[in-house]
Length: 332
Image (cartoon, rainbow, N blue to C red):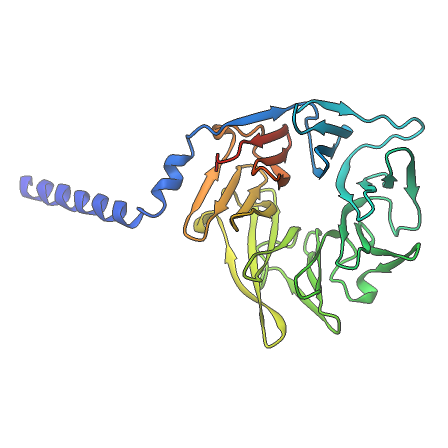
């Protein structure tokens, strides 16, 4: 019995040493979870879904309406529009003329600094996203299709035109000029890609970790990443181009290093690192070698990062469900 106990002890020690050596590449990420970042939290606003920035001013939109924030002082002021009740803002975009487009669940608006105008003609007043393509055309994703604004007229795309679903949650144009549309719909959602001649459809479970698509982004290698998820199910899918067509490459899950199952948004910074922002568990930052996870433990105001940007000085601004977090330059 003593010999058997000794054998078990040696075996256990061998397993610990072996597993530690195998996990050497991920240990830095584990230890970094507890490191405090140099951050500044801006609150109000509290729930922030969208950010837009220009000339030292940040526009922040969410369930509480629209705020503007001075980037130097981090002071926030709520915007008031007499006669209008704008809440549940989901997307903000500054166009090439400096006009702010505001997408909310009660319509689409433009603000030129003096006048607020509600844009009519959309297939649905519930706006999920706004996107500007390379030709400066404005695209809007709604619950009843995508619409592009050209020469003062909306052209609508839905299932009849080739989309996998009318519920368009995100829109993206890659470096080839191809348009990608992500639908957020249980069992019917997925990705529709228009290459200028043909539609390419990618659905769950063959190509996506979940049928609810949250965000789409292209990295510096030309790979297109699709963020998916609902509650505690999801992940990210990678697509590449082969023989002139977009094709599925691989999945990315928590087992691979993501912070949480549902990927809420994706961002690429000036160092070409990919930020996979989860719904409940913070952010997983991929530098090409390993993941580093940051969350409220590190100083984030909230674990659900819905939007973010990097300013000219290298500071990161993250919109969360619990305010805006600025991570000082060099903190990541």
